[in-house]
Length: 144
Image (cartoon, rainbow, N blue to C red; front, side, top):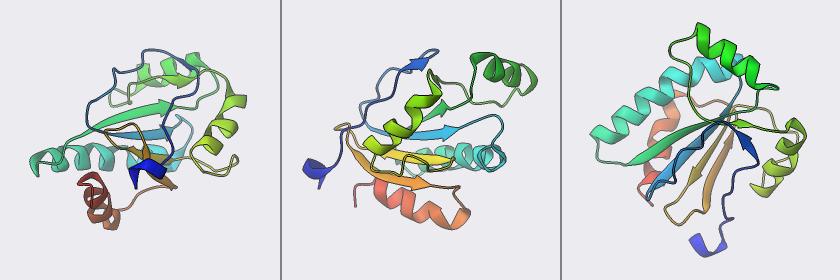
């Protein structure tokens, strides 16, 4: 139930944080050096468009865990399709923050966090997503 779900809060970040969305939010933890993260970016964007076409509203947000803002800015300068969004300010804060989500502090990225309209964590997925995960993601976002 939503009452027992953990509240979602970002760690301290650098860079612009998107305004909260009144509906569901899908946070993707990624980094410029993470090959599985980069491989799934087109899938996430495709699913976002597909969900929208199917009447399932979700705000897709990206949170970088790159070590420095320069790393992220350099990557974005080279890749026109690079995700926008904030970066975790302090690398040491990532593990403790993951623990607040109910995830092992040493979990590796990519990590997906689905947050309901009440700001509660409804699903956390450690690891990449594959095409077979789409129906599950859609069902969660529909609240069923």
